[in-house]
Image (cartoon, rainbow, N blue to C red; front, side, top):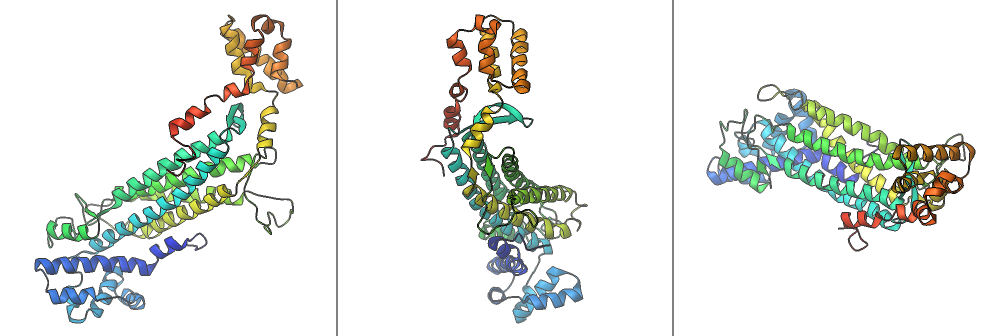
Length: 436
């Protein structure tokens, strides 16, 4: 596993020391509650509150026991001296591991929500700045009808909004723990202990657990991260396509001293957007593994354990990295309205075809005849040059049916974009509300 895509926040949350600290927090909270109820001596609980661990010692114990939780509890018990026998009293490993994992996942989801808020701000800024910047809309990669670049960015903004909501929902779903014992039946410690412990950790009891928290929660979380990553990939893919030399409408920021190719000095490649695409594929693959982990045997097996040590920390880390990188791309995005307009006009204004057809139908022409007639003229533009308005004006059949006012209406670019403001109002994005 590479550290190339680490972020400071995620590295601090998912390192070994942080893992053991989260385990220790659960152990200490359980001991405190047990002492209050009278399960263990209060003096023992106070000693456990002062207990610590040593990673080197844990590693040494694990080489002997081949069990990381036992190795951890041995190190903690050793530091608690005589009170050490009450460390992990009545608990099973995954009372600690799963509860602590929920705490870290919830924290990681909050970090992502904050980061995605920054991306949302950049999409909002672009949407507002380019609300009325016309460009060609493309379907199947082919010129369709005009949109504005702002409208494209507004779509990014709205999807980012949805993904922030999904992260919040995932955080709520992951705020569940369990202190229910080896098969979830509370054979040693009762639900009252669990309720007190989890309340102090700001978690809710898993309604029905086995030895573990059901893995559908983790799978839903990982699939949420995959949705976030894929949403970013959609933006990155659009930038990549619009940075093509023959399109040239957008460009990744290119820093002073940056090199695009070891062989070709002229190159400016969309490398960050390509990297986002690459990492999104990996996060989706990790989400698939999360789905496989749902079907554990009986009250649990270990088939989820090894892969979760990879897929959960890496999914969070890569998603956070991608958010930061894409936010930087959008912050410095090169937008070329002149190229957008040139591309819009490059196809002889054939994008007006639907409007012309509808005006002909309104004037009394059969729709199929109108379609064929306008199609012939549009194809002539594409093969022989000229513009659709010119060819329509020169066509006797059209001139007979459409007066100057009707032709003006059909050929009006502003009319095609007249409802852009309505979409913005529906989203609720204004200069005052852009950060919501």
